[in-house]
Amino acid sequence: MQYLQRHSLIESAVEPIIEKETEAESETGEAETKAPLPNLNDQEYEVLQALAKGEKALRTRTSLAKQTGMTHAEVSQIVERLREKNLVAKKEMKKENGAKIHRWSITPKGREIVELFSDSAGGRS
Image (cartoon, rainbow, N blue to C red; front, side, top):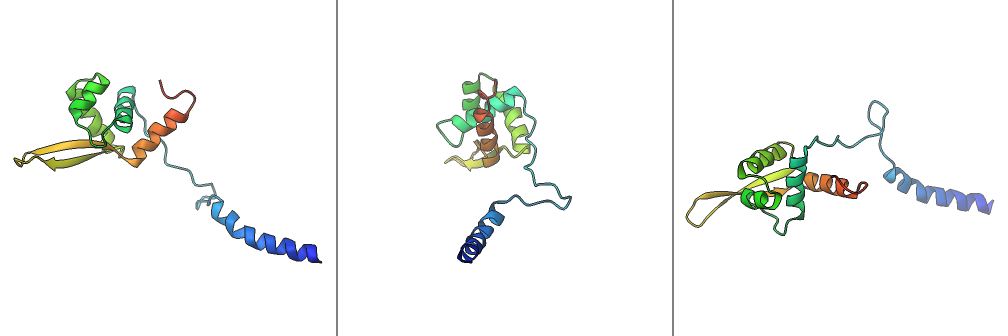
């Protein structure tokens, strides 16, 4: 009898933990899955990786172009596409003279993608 009481106490203590750590089912009865990874070409991934691994959190298109070996125009198009995919963010700033400037940063979603590819078999090539 003592065994059954102890087993019941352990089970009642463990049940909330199991429930919390168990994946929920969707209305269709299938386990919830993460959103699919966005389709990135090699240049987009290279810019995303440069943003993730750069020394500064806010980067210029010029510095990204120098780091990746791409032209300023190529980087401009790429960061806009990455922004549309919510992988990078654009921050508008002002110089002392009032002129607007833009800096680019990686979003948590973008960083997650870089880490995912870096962790996979040898990373992306």
